Length: 151
Image (spheres, rainbow, N blue to C red):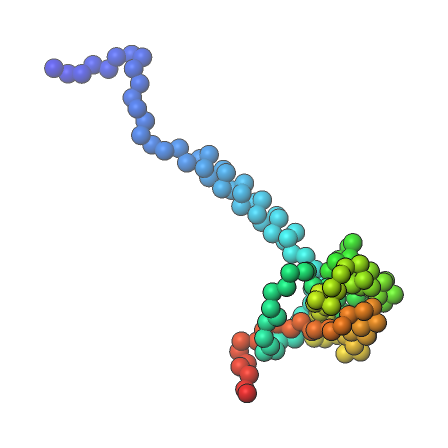
């Protein structure tokens, strides 16, 4: 006996429709491609490569003064961290950051100097930081794994 196909009955479809899944993936890919460059903050600085031990983790966010290749100063905790500061504004902002908090001696103060900047500009930043009340000032470098240290 042959099975007759009755009008109005439907066969189950066992294929998975992946078109909506592909659409969602493409939308997410575009969102990530657009937002990733926006997440990068800070000023473009080509740090010198050295072998140095990493600093221990701190509870407070460090004050980081950046000196770019043109000799401009930037402060990571300023209202607009990507906008250059004058020496006077930098000194004022650092003073308010260090005196506004108790135990300011525990807050790390660091300088990121581009390797192509005039050495005098990095020293000027360090002097401004010391005059603003920083007890010690460290320098940030980029690790150089290709050149091991000798002791």
